[in-house]
Length: 319
Ligand code: ADP
Image 1 (cartoon, rainbow, N blue to C red):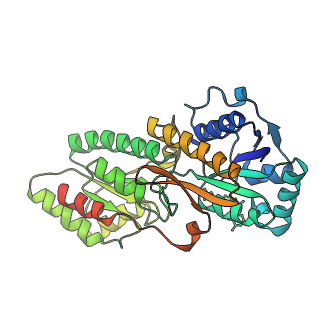
Image 2 (spheres, protein in one colour):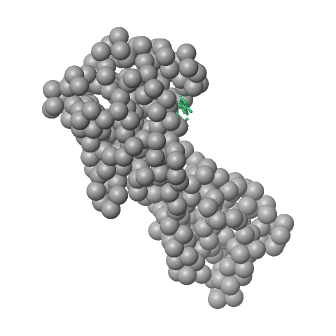
Image 3 (cartoon, protein in one colour):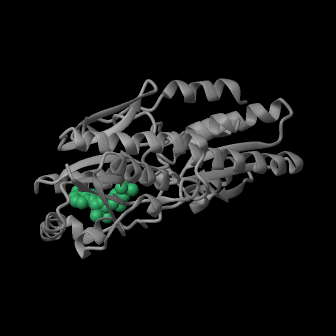
């Protein structure tokens, strides 16, 4: 392989820059030319290409977001769009592509591989919801951001004896809510993987109150319901007053944690190695602390389960 491309796509995540840096530097180290593609799959279709050098990715390892910018590309969802993208890559002499993104971006990469482009996918999403890997880039940073927010909210909750609902990101996956809830000592955690029992939340609040504890933090993943909706339900069903804090997009930003940078660097380099070894459709991830490469198709054929023991533990520890 003489020339590869790299892009970031879908929802951004802290650590994408660190992964990009690793892809570029590892490729150049291996004497492979590397082209940065701007704006995700949109840039692939529009030909927004730039030949990168070592210096192109200097001073970015610590920066949040992605210097390549990210995009959602409806045009790439069409066959004509993907054909154009593949033609552009071939015209540039690019034989392999590293895609840094979430599962939507992975699906796009799989579709692109049909046109004879080798793809290596690097998981980057704060949701940590990609099958086959224990960690995605950005999850650790977002987790720390949320725990820090919970700590601050807890200070005011306890000073004023209030019940706070903290709404965190996670449409279909409860990883962020669960880890942050456990790490932040939340009294209740509500995630998509376990059906919501408002009664149970009320019961837990009652038990706390009987113990003399008047403040509480409830973490809810946005995919279950909004914090406002939960607040309304608690008011209607149990006459419980709550305050709501929606963390929103701050969860996606910020300088990546050391762990995210290290993982991103290792994933990025491995993606280049896999392309160099002739892999056609591969995903990179981590299992038992080892970096692994596995068939991209596996991401869509099964679904990893969340560790429900963690939810059970959080219930045992926080009351
Ligand atoms: P993420 O990668 O964060 O999950 P999205 O789900 O928005 O983000 O996917 C990013 C982009 O990947 C989409 O805008 C689209 O261009 C491409 N993509 C997603 N699903 C498919 C698909 N089934 N076929 C082709 N391209 C897709």
